[in-house]
Structures are given as C-alpha cells and as structure tokens.
Amino acid sequence: MSSALHSHAGLYKRPGPWVTVYTDASTGAGDSLHADDARPELIAGALYRAGADKTDLKAVRVALTRSAKGLPDPVARFLLVNDGEVEFDEFLPGRLVMPQVIDVGPVPNLVPLVHHRPEAFAYVVAEAGRDGGVIHLHHAHMADDVSTEVEGSTENLKKIPGGGASQGGYLHRTENIWRANAAELAGEIDRVVRSCRARLLIIAGDIRARNLVADQLSEASKAILSVIESHTRTDGADRDAFARQVAERVAASIEAEQQRLLEKLESQLGRDHPESAVGLGAVVHALQRAQVETLLLERAAWDEQRLLALAAEPWLSASTNETAGARLIGTITAPSALLRAAALTDANVVLFPPGALDPHRIAALLRWPNGSSV
Image (cartoon, rainbow, N blue to C red; front, top):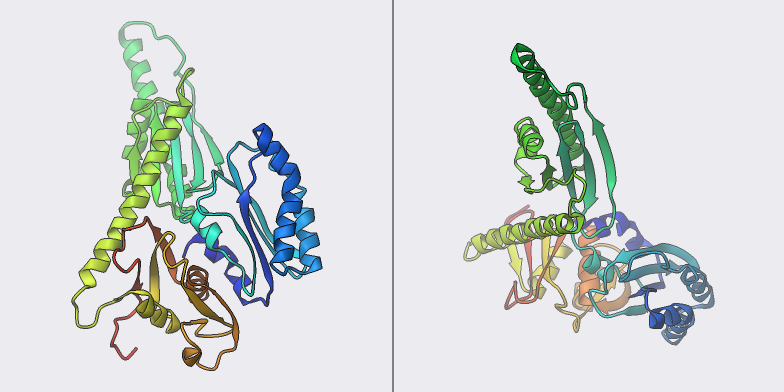
C-alpha cells in the first residue's frame, strides 16, 4: 500500500475522537511570520467549534508552538491527536496539495497525508567518479537523503606518467584501478537497491566511471537503471539542473507505473470473471471482502460522498444494511473510508490525476476474480 498508510494503519483501529490538521506551515514571508504566530490559536478555535475536547486542544496548541522556521518554504504540516496525545506531527515539503483540513472525527483522516505523499517509493541516485562515488537513498515525495560514500583507490590517478613502456604500464594499471573502483561502487549500489527495494536507480558522474559502474551492476539493478548525462563530481557542476533532471526521472517512473496499472485494468474489461471492480459500489463491496489488491482512485474524487466507518470487518459500508453486524463508529467522507478499508485489508493505493479513471473515478484490481468461489 502507500507507505503513508502502511506506516500508520494501526491508528485506524484505535477509538476516537481524532483531531486531524493539515495546514500551511510556511514561515518565510512577513505575512507568513505573522500567520505562524497566530496559527495555534486560529486552529485551536476552529477545532473547538468542531467539538474537540480540552485535552486534545491543549495537545494541539503545544504541538503548534513548534515552528517550521529554518525549513525551506513552502512547507505544509500534518498533525494527528488522539486522547490528548500527539500521534503524528510532521512538516511536509511543498505547498498544500489539497484544501486545508481542520477536522474532528471518529477515525484519523489520513487523506491529506496520502495526497501529499502518495508514493514514497525508494529510489537511488549514484554519482560515480574514477576514485569511487556517492550513493544517495531517497523516497519519492520526501526530503530525505541517506548518503553512502565509496572511497576507491587513488593510486596512479594523479600521477603523471613518463613516456615509452612505462606509460603503457601506467595506463594499464590505471584502467585496472578504475575498474576495481567501479566494481566496488557497483556492489554497494546493488546492496542499497536490494535492501530498500528501490524502484528506480539513477547514475550520473564521470562518463567513463558511470559506464564502468553500469556494466558491473546486477541484472536487477540494470532493470531499473536510468543514466543522466551529467558530470556531477566536478567543481562548478550545476546541482539545481541535476536535481531537476532527477525529479523528471522520478515523475516518469510514477507515470509509467500508473500507465501499467491502467493497462492492466483495461485488459480485464469485458471478461466473464474479471479481476477488477469499477465504480464506487463495486469497489466498496470488494473492499468489504478484502478482495482488493490495488485501489485506483482519482484525486478529489468522491469528496462529496459519505460512507459508514465500522469498528470491525468489513470496516466500511454504504448503508446500515451491509454492516455484517459490525458496530457503526461514524459517517465519514468516502475517500477517508476507502483509504481506511484499504489500509486495514493491506491493499495498495495509487492516486491518479482527475480524468484518468473517467467516467467512474475509482476502480480496483483484485486478488481473485469476481464470481469465483475463493
């Protein structure tokens, strides 16, 4: 599932009420500084009017005294409070990706977090040089960077050879050092890719070094490899341009995965027993059966629709006639109910831009075909 859901799925089973806050936390401009000072009371006032209790209001006020000052603007914030305790509080890089949320409800509303961080898949960026390189582990839609430096041998690399036979021997030894350094870097890249289950590997740096590294990668790493023609390990390298190229490759990876899922969905249409469900009603029934492998949902779809949240399986329902005896804990927005049911049944969630799933705006790929006896 979305890593945001996977990490916090256990919160869905805890009793409410829950306070959810998703708001702009930028502090850079003068107006923003003023808003930063006023923000705790403004948000607490809105929560008071929404019915938040005193212990939760106190926890929110205390949490919001911690400012995003020092973080690059723009920045958003996502906060969850339950039973007077802060259960989640994180600054999220970038602007709000959906309208502000200040909410009190029976379950935590993870919709803003999933929208802001829809696919936090791991990807690896390696910058290769003839003397080793640096490996960066990132996650999409996050500002993290775990770096590993590989220091290879520098013997011969800075020496100036003489002529004749000695030069030939020097060149041969230098080539061997390059290859050994590249093999060491490739081995470390393979280890990082394997350990984090990276979906994308990007290599840049010295042209000779990156080619040697690429040649010595494992087949699994080669299958996700993308090369950026940029020598990033030199003085004066344009880091901003390189960052933009990396962002473009990450976006292309996301689009490719979305296209793969759309093609898989389309291949199921018209079958007698499709491994898919299309439309809100069909998807809700599939989630009730824990049949959904991947939930496909358009951003901003079904915001106007409400569903029932249940305390036990089947976790959600469109009406009181379909609760299977589970206790009703509240009526919530359809996106919140759908994400909750997906998390509690270990389904993947992939968000799509508006129009991608027209006309139904929602679909699901299933673990077993409709109409089967499983």
